[in-house]
Image 1 (cartoon, rainbow, N blue to C red):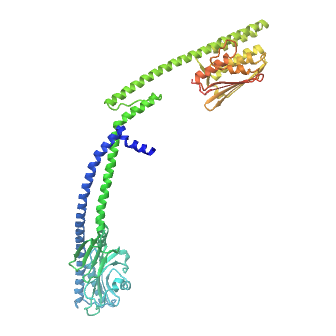
Image 2 (image 1 turned 60 degrees about the vertical axis):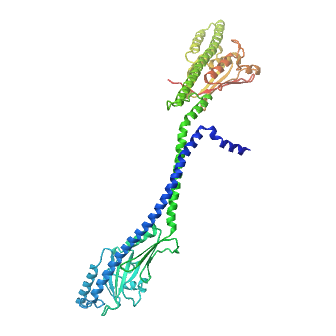
Length: 572
């Protein structure tokens, strides 16, 4: 089966690949120590994390205990002082109402200054609220809103001693420009045993709870723990908002405050501790995976570096085999592979030199063939022209012979100069004009010639003596007594030029037309067909076998010659 062959090929691939053998070896050497090191690292790290988790929790609850003790101790000390002051009947002349006399106003101001003197940076407010709704202290508060607070309503009417309100907001405060905290912790001390106008009043002290909330947040988020603070009667002072059932495997820390006998309980579920261990496990696995990938990459690169030069040599040999002799191997080292690459480069250079030598010989052969074809055209032209001059002199004895000889000289100059094989279209047309002048002397105005070519193409190159042999065939084989019309058109077609030469002469019979451009066909000088064949061969030798001449003709209906060659502009 095909899939079994694929499996078998995959299994036996390392046997046939040096690169794969090196790759597997390097991966094994790198992977085994990584696995052992990763396992030992995970085991030790897990033990350390669990131990540090316990120590960190104990340290955190101890710091929280000290912080809450500091707050509660300060608030209780302030409360005792104010209470002692209010118990003194000599210093206490307050009547619990808005002052109606200057002496009462001074007493109130002195008492307010006394309350302000006990404020600290963390104190939000110290004030005494009377049963009538009047209060002492600052900043201003809305007493009506204060007594409607839930925590205020929960204070028992017969409560004696310090009542901790817990942590709550600052909505009763009116002075919002004092940069009040969002939450405060409060203590209310009812004056149940007090006589006089301040009987049943309450001392209220509130302190900024932002630092406490930061500590609570640290415990709840960093330790993923649940915090509960209760007073001595079991009333909850603070509790983490998220509800959760207690479990036997929870880590629990408990501390009792010395200042007010509160109990702080921090309960940490086992899941976060285990999660930390899992995090270490996943991190270790990820690290091992990354190290493994890195080892794979390093192994791949190292094995590739060893085998790359061998593969490069193989690839370059294949390129040379298909004829791309520019391939070379860059010498990187001086070892055996480096010396082998140098020998390969020398071999390719020698082959390239031999090919260049063959090309030069072929070029010389090509040039010799071009000259041979050209030399066949020259006698052909000279013979016909001299016969024509002889006939003209015999018939007329006219001075026109001088003009014919002049134009013949110009034609021969273009024909016999063999230093340039490619000339501009303009120069070729100059030769054509001189040749046509000779024919005008011979035939007069019996024929017409029309030339159509954009001047922008005049500088394009064409093989020398291309048009004159074709026109010569038209006059000697196509026209009778020189009568007829000739049109010559040169147009661009993409990257090529297309020349079309047409006449309305006798045309060419079909059997002769098939033999005109056929190679290895014997042709006699003056026998016809030699000029067309030589012109066609010129184009093929100069520009390639894909270019050349196409002849279409019909007897008594004229001949059409089409030549295509690449557009090349003459350089000065």
